[in-house]
Length: 260
Length: 245
Image (cartoon, rainbow over all chains, first blue to last red; front, side, top):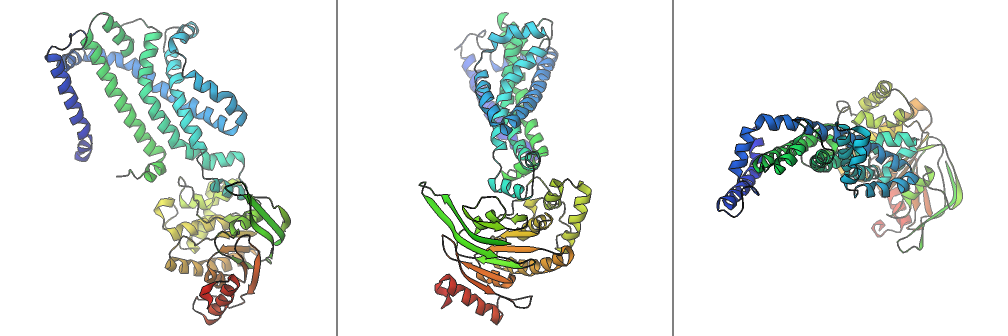
């Protein structure tokens, strides 16, 4: 436990320094409080609105977690399909790359037309944004198997499917999870975009929705407080995935020599 | 196994063809251990890949039973434990896991690997990894085993242990399976003589057979046996090595 705490110390010191600079910057009157609230005001808003923020975090967290799971699943499946079929690769890859450039606002209306204002259009947005890093890393991971290893499997009469099962899929697993870790950082922004674009009604409609509403109502400190919640949530998710990788693919973790 | 007049070239760095093997002819009788020695880069690995049908011959022909390859590096899969690595061929042949593990467990006990069945490759020493790779090759059920410098990466002491061990393992294996022919590729002349029934000496690239030596000595043999040393000198002369003098 003490080691853990020691491990987090550099990050804590850095955050404290940044908060101090921020506090000074606002206190010296350099900027209007409606544009940038001071950290102590954000802290106050966080404290006063704890219940409200927690209730809004719930739908956003659901969107992010389910979205990552869907992105991991679809990205992995598509990567395997592309790996097995060069034709499919040539057909799908440019589309997948291009899909990342489409502004969500363009398709938001269509998504609402299809699925209404529930969680589905938001999941679609997050999955669309997040499957791509998983796809790219997994395709590379599948292709990373030592050619000598593939030769060996051939002399053991392994079928295409068995080569995939015994060598390529396990080799790609840590890559896919790394992809998901990259995806995760954009998933949180994705959730904000999704909530803002496929607007929802109701009191607890998610942190993204809330941030939009607060900014319009000039409740800047609460918007910042919501951003702080997203900030912490993203960090928590990132390290959860790192733990998951260690459990699912311990060999990859070891070979990087990070084992303590 | 019969290799007759086989040639093989591959494309070199500047796209000019490089001849790896030039009209090479070799044979290995059933249950024989043929060692192929030659300097680095004389096409020894290419020869084994041709025998294992991993590459086509440019010219000539190879007649042999289906062959299993034990590569230079052990190529154990890091996500499988030792036992699962050893039984890879059985699993590929769709044998149920528990049954496959039972078969390998017997060999593990014979080869001094007991207690390490569940260990992952990174937890094993180099010699142990090679032994697991050897069990994997044995369990392929192929009549012909192609061993590509199996002990090249080991230190001298471990290597000597592995020689004793391999001699034993093959003797036991033959008495059980009946037929097992082995082609061992190495650049270590002593290793070839200590292990093999017959030694074929290859020239530098493009590889061709420059000498064949019958070993015909009692086993176990030691590097320091007078006959082994004498044969070694003959092999080194055939290789054109200075150290023979």
